[in-house]
Amino acid sequence: MIIPFFKMHGIGNDFILMDELDLNATLNISDLAASVCHRQYGVGADGLMIARHSLIADARMEYYNSDGSIGEMCGNGIRCFGRYVDTEGSKEPRRLTIETLAGIKELTIRTDNKRQSVVSVNMGMPAFHDFNNKIMVNGAEFIYSYVTMGVPHVVIFTKEINQEITDSVGPLLEKHKNFMNGTNVNFCYIENRNNMNVFTWERGAGHTLACGTGITSAYAVAARMGKVDNHVVVQAEGGILELETVDNGSIKMTGPAADICKGQYYFD
Image 1 (cartoon, rainbow, N blue to C red):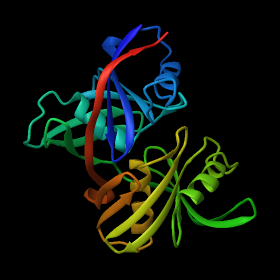
Image 2 (image 1 turned 30 degrees about the horizontal axis):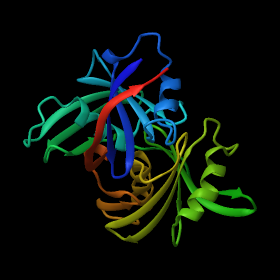
Image 3 (image 1 turned 90 degrees about the vertical axis):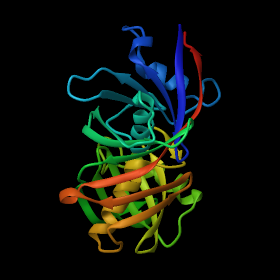
Image 4 (image 1 turned 30 degrees about the vertical axis):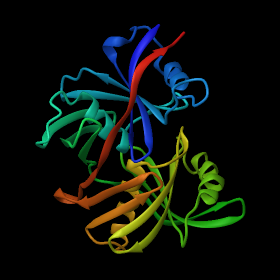
């Protein structure tokens, strides 16, 4: 079958977006996600999002990782999803509500130009499970915190971060026995009280250029440790997000969502 699609990115985290009206009801979406996200045999992306009708919000976001597994929430993805379902495309800020498996998320979206929007998302409150605990990986000890921000995240603070540590330690922690359902892994370097750097190994997607829920989780842990101020600029490999704590401990994430292309995907 031929399926219309859009491809977008949020600071380098790229996604395929489709409308449920263009899909066969019997289609296996996990298979579709693994196929269309493949970077050699498909369009290539970190994840697939399906826009569905919602009875309790403006739209429902159904998210799949690039390996076909279901994700409860995606921070960079929901900004792209907001741009995808926004029918007005106004330069004036507009509010949207998006239903996810992690609850309803409130967005404020402003369209800068034909290619890009700036989107703020109330990510909710972090749930801390482990805080400054020790874990062994291949004989090396790491101090980590474990937090849920819609999806599970391990946060490790380091004196430096690079692709080597992300790609070597990340996949081992993703499937570590301590995390029954797998976890995302974030390596964080704090420059000063208003600036951080985060590299992420994503559960079900691998090394990505950015992870919105991961960056939010890293900020949440740093704030709880008293290492950063209320408003922080976070540099990921693919770009910059702004984080701040708002109502009763909720965290607001602000960043861009940009178009890459649109087309038709041939799925057998």
